[in-house]
Structures are given as C-alpha cells and as structure tokens.
Image 1 (cartoon, rainbow, N blue to C red):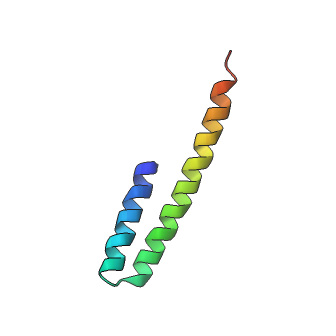
Image 2 (cartoon, rainbow, N blue to C red):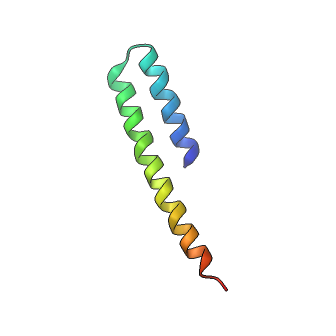
Image 3 (cartoon, rainbow, N blue to C red):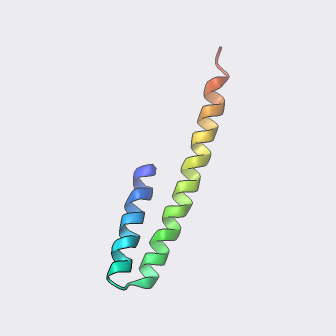
Length: 53
C-alpha cells in the first residue's frame, strides 16, 4: 500500500510540473488517503502483534 502512495505522489508531482492542476490535486488527495490507511493498518498490526506471549 505504501508503494501505491509513492506512485500517486510521483504522479501528482509530474502533473503539477506540466500544469495539470486538477489531476495533480486528485492524485495528491488519493496519496494522502492511502498513506493514512497505511498508517492505521500499521498501528493495528503492531498492537495485535504484541499480544502474543
């Protein structure tokens, strides 16, 4: 999932360089959403992984 976030960030940067503001904004929004989902899943996996004794 982190790979998708990096892909959309790169897409947003390239679109911004060429002047496609709407596409850049959309790709950046998707990248933000995917990054936050990744963080939530990371925290959940860390919490559930520590319960094993």
